Image 1: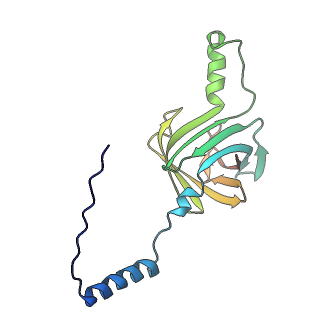
Image 2: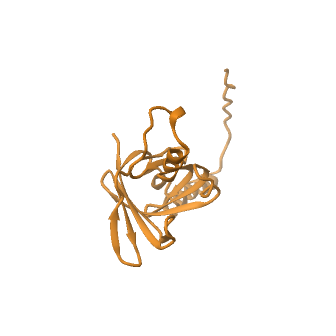
Image 3: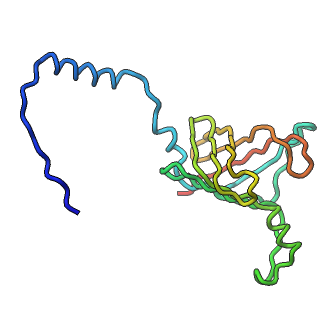
Length: 177
């Protein structure tokens, strides 16, 4: 691919115009503007190291047994997450999975992707693909605390998919190197 040649022209610029340009440059430096870096602080792949569910009615926090997962944030503003929970059935092969096993596999996983925004305290996942079609087209908000290379996510209070009672889920993610 050939690039066009650059044309350089010399012209007379009055000193008042130069002063105006200097003022514009100074204003661009001094006027606060949103920082782009905040959205890229999440860039990378994280492994789920802990998940727990707090039942708001009782205050009881229960660890989610055998929770495994990864979440990935790209510099292009896209994200993907996959989490599995509990004891998952394992058949000899996909062809030998029973319908009951397939249902259990589906019920013990969460997967979605889309775009994201991060302001340093909350992350918003704008979901455009998901395993259950329930989240598609929604925005999932997580309150975020950063602790070194760990992200601590807390969901907003939400109904449990199992009994409808209000819960808050805490997820701890470790950045992979």
